[in-house]
Length: 359
Image (cartoon, rainbow, N blue to C red; front, top):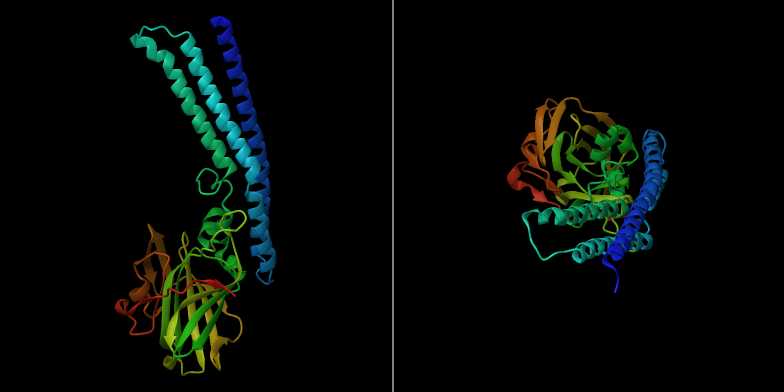
């Protein structure tokens, strides 16, 4: 029907045009991603700058910035699918064109050097598939390690350990905006110990000791890791929430007969050496034990720790924290919340299975 030489020229020109268009799509996507990275970095810088305003309650602004970051982080689904479909179709047509071009000039005589003619198709196809993989990860950055070093996922903006290691931000300044509060609710024959956050932050190991007249009443430790599920519309993870309640464990109601209590709450972010210590003063008011004043926040340099390979290790502890080594020493990071009401030994430790909720 057609002359072989002319048909091969046509297929070659088609392949060249398709390859050029595919490269143009890559340039188009890269320009969009470049603009998106610049915008996300500006939002991240603004978010971190706000964290240093510790004397002002700006959790509302920080929450809106996280939502704004999520909005710019997501690539519109319909254009993204259209671009990927175009890339898939172009790659298929390119490979078919190469195969047809070789098939037309193919001679039914196989020689050892024949692999040299076929090899470029395999290498070219592999490069195109890897090119598609790169563009797909750029368009949909969730769940891949390619773009995370450049633009961290929105859920990482609530991780204290990540922010501390990623931008070397002060953990103390960051957690001030969480506005941590401690509350104990007496319900029937037991009391529930609740840690409240005005703005959600996680990604750290903690240890808490509640005492009455210097006598330990309750101890809790574990890893705080929050999962808010996925958004209904986008199907992507919800990055943050406000007015969060985190159950830490339970105390028998009979063990809370005193009027005043003191709680020491230690936060151990990964990558740091010394924990952050909160000192809460609590007073009993009916069936509720609440804070009396703002907590004292300081860095406890008397404790040195290390978190490696999902294991919490105490290197040095001169702060005389009761039952700290017995309960939290050499703990595994398992995203569980453990507590103990006495005797304070590992065999009496229980797990708090109640889910984290939003008030």
